[in-house]
Image 1 (cartoon, helix red, strand yellow):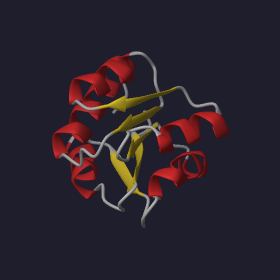
Image 2 (cartoon, one colour; image 1 turned 120 degrees about the vertical axis):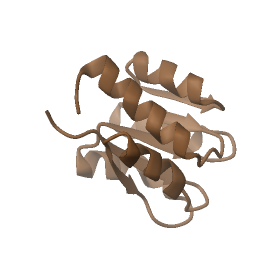
Image 3 (spheres, one colour; image 1 turned 45 degrees about the horizontal axis):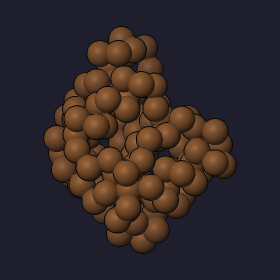
Length: 121
């Protein structure tokens, strides 16, 4: 099976901790560089053939909504917890919008949930 590829876009150019969690769970992470990276999330997901994407900004919505509108990805936004993200993965969402939550646990739990749901490694 193909490796789970997660693209991370953070309004402040962060995302390294959540990327470490993605990789700890056996996935591969691409952190979009620079400020306003959340707004480029959908473009990078499309170009890289990502499994899913994570957007971080104050509201937890801008990058996720942009990716949904531009590419038709199923998105859930405004999330503030790991549990909400796991639920979104289980609902088949491809773009997850969070408030600022650059935590290793988030990346790890999302990839684990995706693998559990879809049987990929």
